[in-house]
Length: 194
Image 1 (tube, helix red, strand yellow):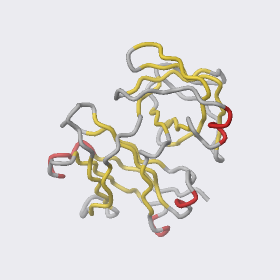
Image 2: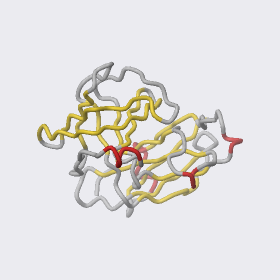
Image 3: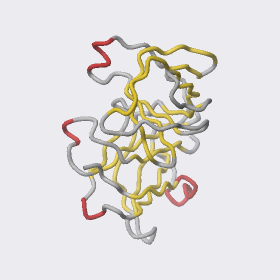
Image 4: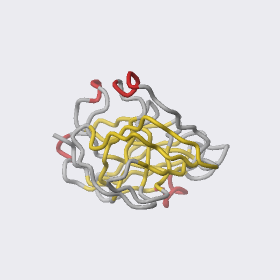
């Protein structure tokens, strides 16, 4: 089944139903047998943890294969066999092809209109709209994380009292025990957008 690739993101609400404090979680597997993962959360430095979510639908995730500065080309390599497609202006208006690029756990939200298949699981995404949903347009570097912000990205509501705390997420592939997933932990400081 293999371990999951995982992200935990402090980003603005993507859907009106998510308009409470929380974080977005995304995961995908590298192997064909990956069937989702259970997400465990520790708010006390790892002393205890609680299962808080299950992710079944793999996210479309990858990494940048070139730096992104003021140019209009976002070059990405995907982990899985998902495809990235062009979008019409009407589709862009309803946030089709909305994505996030994370540099040091800080996300910029973008949209892309044109997707060009450049090889095995690689794409050049062009006609970009940068700094969406109140995020800031910044330069990104090769190997920064990429995720398509579609229905496979899970919203996890969190109590606002956790703001400023380091949260430890453990993404355990379904069918495995959490203790065997030590290397799938992801620590993120909870910083809910205002």
